[in-house]
Length: 157
Length: 135
Image (cartoon, rainbow over all chains, first blue to last red; front, side, top):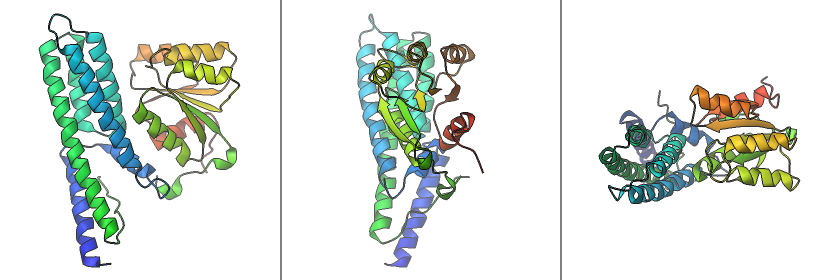
């Protein structure tokens, strides 16, 4: 094991993780998820966020269909989708996605189709951005493990 | 609370049922329970929870989501209580305005926690039901 390489990778991982919190991509719920990962389920966080991203894609697609026709918007359906998405994003600590959902719900409540379309676009952007960021994070984890190191605990506070 | 400080309740042989239509929440809630040594199963809506009990299964603890298709958490909780099910039922939902919480509690809940569920919140539920005594 090259200890210098491992130390560099661990530092990179820590800095990247902290930046994700500081930039608002993640909140404390992600920390709670990481606490649940153990030797028995070493990929737990990756598996749960993968479920979340699948959920995002499906819900966004469904809401897009509901919002398609200006004369026939099913706001109840859209509201249901936003509620689901807010719940999942909150559960995995996807802070930016959750915050867009809060604004999205307000647009649904007043049946503002244009506002909903903007929020839909924003939530699509945010979940894809988070997906890329977390993939980079998981790749760093793999590099650390392959170099013979351990994943450091990161104190966000 | 660090991983090393988490209580292991496996000796208590507690059983739990997760009732939630969202796969992300199902996965997290199951993992939370498993980390504390609680055997658990999952169903996707209130009707499946009722059906599980009709088939003779019983649980010490039920984590009940509120918004679910087919039969929601309020309906399912009422139905389970009508059936004489005395399991401890904790409502777990993102809907937290006082009116909705009151309606859910009045359906027959023993406790209510706002999502997202964490280890601390789950331990709070278990402590309230005397399933876990902090030493």
